[in-house]
Image (cartoon, rainbow, N blue to C red; front, side):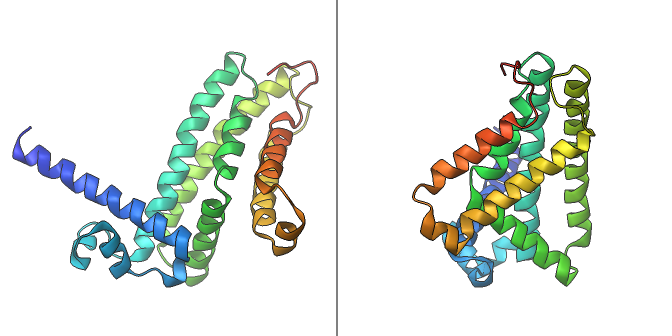
Amino acid sequence: MDKAKLKIQQFKQREQDILDASLHLLMSHGEDKVTVEQIAIEVDIGKGTIYKHFTSKTEIYCRLMFDYECALKSKLEEAIELADEGDYSAPARVYFSGRMENPVKARLFQRLEEKMLANGEEKEKLAELERVRQETIEKINSSFGRRIAEGRLKDAPPYYYYMAYWALTHGAVELYHNHYCQSVVDDMDGLMEFIMEAGVRMGLDPSTKK
C-alpha cells in the first residue's frame, strides 16, 4: 500500500475511533458532561486532531445519528427484498430490532436531535438526516402497500403501519427509561422482546407463516 492510501486509511480509522469514543462517552455520561477534551483523551489523540475531522461536538453528534439512520436504511432495504421473496415479516423484524435493541442509544439520539432542533444547530445536517429517513419511510410504505395488496396485511393506508411502528418503538424506549416502570418490571429486556414480537406480528394475516 502506498503512503497516500495508507494516510487516507489511517485518517478514516481515526475518524471512526472518534465516533466510537464519542458514542461510548455519551451513553456513559450523557451529552451535557461530554467535552471534546474527554473525547480526545478517550481516543488518545490531541484535542486539535479532533477538529481535523469535525468542526464541533454537534457535528460529531449529527454524524452518529446519520450513520445510525443509514445503517437501518440499508438493513431495511435488504429486508424489503426478503419480504418480496416471501419472508413477509423481515422489514418489521429489522425495524423493531434496529430501533429497540439499544434503548439507551435510541433515547440519546432522540434527545440530541430535539436539543439541536430547539437551538437551531446543524440545520443542513439535520435536513440531510431527515432526507434519509424520508427515503426509508417511502420504501417501507411501498412494501406495506404490496403486502396489503396481497392480502397478507390488514387493509389500511400503508403509512398507518409505519406510524404504528414508530409509536410502538418510541413508546417502548420511553417505557425503558421510566422510573415507575423500572420499579415494577422484573425483566425489562424480556418486556422489550415481547413488545418487539408483538410489533412484528402487527397486522399480519393469521395464515401468514412469516
